[in-house]
Length: 359
Image (tube, rainbow, N blue to C red; front, side, top):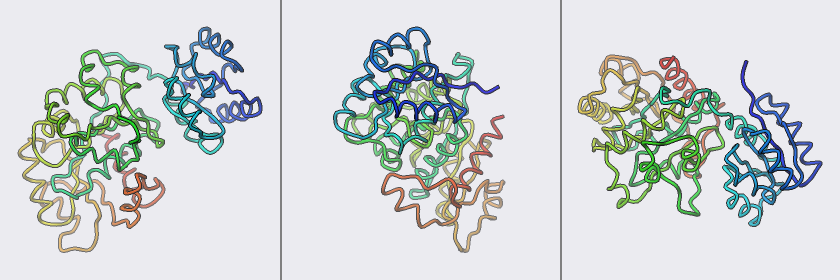
């Protein structure tokens, strides 16, 4: 039987609280076990029930933020500077506006349920997404693969190893109005990383995955080496079902560490000679021939066809993603393309292939 996240609800407006309670209960993924109308009641409910998550008005969130029990999700009927400030000060993992963000709230509440096993024996799947030639679309594919896995209600962490440029941050619309927590903050904790540490560093995307950002600063990036990256990824995989690595083009120490720690390497190809040549060289240099899956991105009519992947690399392309004119505009705006479209369905097939091999 699937477990359901236990929620304590603390909202100032009684009618809104009723709506939220009935909505969460109907999802089948969360159940409201107590309600509170003031800080005293909220603190008592948290202490007695130890819920998986607390959904609270920013003005009532202080007891939840100071508690070690449960994930705090701030909810209000409008987005104001005061409500956002209250949510940040309380340490909320996410801020949601009712009712517009109710689906995102439901997903966040369901993810608050702790995994059944957070012991050192857990080993989540690590999948590297690598475009040996610039412009192949590795950033696009890494973000959409993480989203496809997140939609399957698996704990997925996307790690951006493009340390100096941090392209993933812009591609998924990560906040840029304040200094982000990045892999540089996680590395000192690798030896003793736990779920609470991870919660404080990762950024949650509405599509159901979480993101470990890159610093995007060449000076900070220069301080992070391959061994540190390997240790960080090994620590994260103990706390997640799937870790997706966004690997930058090149073969420096960080790139090779990311490739070698991965169980699968998704090689992103375009239908041209330079892309195939770069992929062959990179695969040989990193010695990951036996772990590669191939994806043809932005496929269109050309002299080289998807069938040539098997002729050159000894195995066929797992997925062929067609040209999609909606992708550049969406990525420029920090948005993902819908999972229901042709591109989204193609990436979902790749996610199914990756997860099938993990079982």
